Image (cartoon, rainbow, N blue to C red; front, side):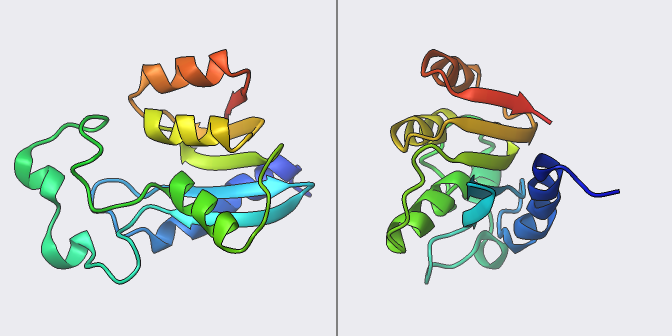
Length: 145
Protein backbone atom coordinates (compact mmCIF):
# COMPACT_ATOMS: atom_id res chain seq x y z
CA UNK A 1 0.00 0.00 0.00
CA UNK A 2 1.37 3.40 -0.97
CA UNK A 3 2.10 5.64 2.05
CA UNK A 4 0.61 9.11 2.42
CA UNK A 5 3.05 12.01 2.16
CA UNK A 6 3.09 12.35 5.95
CA UNK A 7 3.80 8.62 6.37
CA UNK A 8 6.55 8.83 3.76
CA UNK A 9 8.42 11.63 5.53
CA UNK A 10 7.78 10.22 9.02
CA UNK A 11 9.38 6.92 7.97
CA UNK A 12 12.45 8.80 6.71
CA UNK A 13 13.04 10.19 10.21
CA UNK A 14 14.20 6.75 11.32
CA UNK A 15 17.07 6.87 8.81
CA UNK A 16 18.06 10.48 9.56
CA UNK A 17 18.18 9.95 13.34
CA UNK A 18 20.77 7.18 12.91
CA UNK A 19 23.34 9.94 12.28
CA UNK A 20 22.71 11.44 15.73
CA UNK A 21 25.68 11.50 18.09
CA UNK A 22 23.66 12.24 21.24
CA UNK A 23 23.96 9.59 23.95
CA UNK A 24 20.58 10.44 25.52
CA UNK A 25 18.12 10.87 22.69
CA UNK A 26 18.36 10.45 18.92
CA UNK A 27 16.35 13.16 17.18
CA UNK A 28 15.77 13.82 13.48
CA UNK A 29 14.11 16.62 11.54
CA UNK A 30 13.12 16.90 7.89
CA UNK A 31 11.91 20.18 6.38
CA UNK A 32 9.56 19.69 3.44
CA UNK A 33 8.08 22.20 1.04
CA UNK A 34 5.80 21.32 -1.87
CA UNK A 35 6.34 17.60 -1.13
CA UNK A 36 10.12 17.99 -1.58
CA UNK A 37 12.79 17.63 1.09
CA UNK A 38 14.47 20.99 1.62
CA UNK A 39 16.80 20.05 4.49
CA UNK A 40 17.43 17.41 7.12
CA UNK A 41 19.03 17.57 10.53
CA UNK A 42 19.89 15.41 13.49
CA UNK A 43 21.15 16.26 16.96
CA UNK A 44 24.88 16.23 17.50
CA UNK A 45 27.97 18.30 18.13
CA UNK A 46 28.84 21.08 15.66
CA UNK A 47 31.09 20.17 12.73
CA UNK A 48 34.69 19.66 13.76
CA UNK A 49 33.85 19.37 17.48
CA UNK A 50 34.25 16.14 19.46
CA UNK A 51 31.09 14.09 19.84
CA UNK A 52 29.67 13.09 23.22
CA UNK A 53 30.31 9.46 22.29
CA UNK A 54 34.01 10.31 22.23
CA UNK A 55 34.25 12.45 25.37
CA UNK A 56 31.11 11.72 27.38
CA UNK A 57 27.89 13.59 28.03
CA UNK A 58 28.21 16.69 30.21
CA UNK A 59 24.47 16.62 30.97
CA UNK A 60 24.70 13.02 32.20
CA UNK A 61 27.78 13.80 34.27
CA UNK A 62 25.99 16.71 35.95
CA UNK A 63 22.64 14.91 36.34
CA UNK A 64 20.72 17.51 34.33
CA UNK A 65 17.14 16.37 33.60
CA UNK A 66 15.76 16.33 30.08
CA UNK A 67 14.20 19.64 29.05
CA UNK A 68 16.40 21.76 31.35
CA UNK A 69 19.52 23.88 30.83
CA UNK A 70 19.80 23.40 27.07
CA UNK A 71 22.91 25.56 27.02
CA UNK A 72 24.87 22.84 28.84
CA UNK A 73 24.99 20.50 25.88
CA UNK A 74 27.48 20.08 23.02
CA UNK A 75 24.73 19.12 20.59
CA UNK A 76 22.82 21.29 18.22
CA UNK A 77 19.19 20.16 18.02
CA UNK A 78 17.91 18.45 14.89
CA UNK A 79 15.56 21.32 14.04
CA UNK A 80 18.40 23.83 14.41
CA UNK A 81 20.66 21.76 12.14
CA UNK A 82 17.93 21.53 9.49
CA UNK A 83 17.31 25.30 9.60
CA UNK A 84 21.07 25.96 9.38
CA UNK A 85 21.45 23.53 6.47
CA UNK A 86 18.74 25.37 4.53
CA UNK A 87 20.38 28.73 5.30
CA UNK A 88 23.84 27.54 4.23
CA UNK A 89 22.41 26.43 0.90
CA UNK A 90 20.25 29.55 0.47
CA UNK A 91 16.93 27.73 0.47
CA UNK A 92 13.80 29.35 1.92
CA UNK A 93 11.86 27.27 4.41
CA UNK A 94 9.02 29.77 4.78
CA UNK A 95 5.60 28.11 4.68
CA UNK A 96 7.21 24.65 4.99
CA UNK A 97 6.36 21.62 7.12
CA UNK A 98 8.88 20.13 9.50
CA UNK A 99 8.74 16.47 10.51
CA UNK A 100 10.45 15.75 13.83
CA UNK A 101 10.90 12.69 16.01
CA UNK A 102 10.08 14.80 19.10
CA UNK A 103 8.05 17.95 19.72
CA UNK A 104 10.34 21.00 19.82
CA UNK A 105 12.01 22.53 22.87
CA UNK A 106 11.35 26.21 23.52
CA UNK A 107 14.55 27.31 21.75
CA UNK A 108 13.68 25.37 18.59
CA UNK A 109 10.04 26.48 18.82
CA UNK A 110 11.08 30.13 18.71
CA UNK A 111 13.37 29.46 15.75
CA UNK A 112 10.62 27.59 13.87
CA UNK A 113 8.18 30.44 14.50
CA UNK A 114 10.63 33.02 13.13
CA UNK A 115 11.54 30.76 10.20
CA UNK A 116 7.84 30.91 9.23
CA UNK A 117 7.28 27.14 9.47
CA UNK A 118 3.54 26.58 9.15
CA UNK A 119 3.14 22.93 10.15
CA UNK A 120 4.94 20.60 12.58
CA UNK A 121 4.42 16.84 12.51
CA UNK A 122 6.12 14.97 15.35
CA UNK A 123 6.09 11.41 16.69
CA UNK A 124 7.02 11.77 20.39
CA UNK A 125 6.56 14.36 23.10
CA UNK A 126 9.45 16.38 24.52
CA UNK A 127 8.90 17.71 28.06
CA UNK A 128 8.44 21.41 27.23
CA UNK A 129 4.89 22.75 27.61
CA UNK A 130 6.04 26.35 27.18
CA UNK A 131 7.27 25.51 23.67
CA UNK A 132 3.89 24.03 22.79
CA UNK A 133 2.06 27.11 24.09
CA UNK A 134 4.26 29.44 21.99
CA UNK A 135 3.69 27.35 18.86
CA UNK A 136 -0.05 27.39 19.49
CA UNK A 137 -0.02 31.15 20.04
CA UNK A 138 1.88 31.58 16.75
CA UNK A 139 -0.80 29.61 14.92
CA UNK A 140 1.48 26.80 13.79
CA UNK A 141 -0.41 23.60 13.09
CA UNK A 142 0.88 20.84 15.39
CA UNK A 143 0.18 17.21 14.55
CA UNK A 144 1.25 14.36 16.84
CA UNK A 145 1.70 11.32 14.64
